[in-house]
Length: 267
Image (cartoon, rainbow, N blue to C red; front, side, top):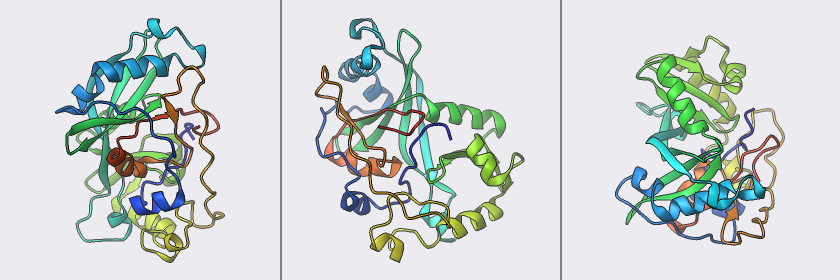
């Protein structure tokens, strides 16, 4: 895996709240803007990025000089309607948009923005630029294809027509290096997650914290929220359990999450 936590991309927002997957403490609100790009490059967002890049003494906050490169990209997550076999359902649905931010020392981060009543707002900052990088890779591998993530196994794919191709090692393990057909992929995810969709007995009993492969053990309880660096009390750190599906809830509260991807998951 590439270090991401297994997210809850197929969960309803109500399930996320019930599971306590959201951090209890609210962080500062970043400004809303007419476009994701404007929200990502707003002065207050750049100031937050400076603190983010300076965490753990990586570099001086005053030297971070963050910049946002290029436009935002839509980030799609495997759709529960597709898993359920609903006629005409696309394989994935857009959950948020992501922009790449770069520090003076080369560190990269992904800014996640969602549409609010007042405009687009950054609701999460994650280390690395997976979302943008895989969107770019998918465009090269299958031009015009739809790039999406299967959060339960942290796999990235690109789909076009009847073809589904892997973009990372997790996806290769799932569908093979040459990919699979859309129909075969649908059969695979239906078998793996069909009994774990929102509204299922699995979800109703409170086990929907991120779907494991069908034979796996029950999903673990959300990890405790790590404390923010002492010098930066306004910046909270999301728990490992807060996945892409949490964005809808987080956006409504105006909470900004600072997620740090690492080899042992996110803290």
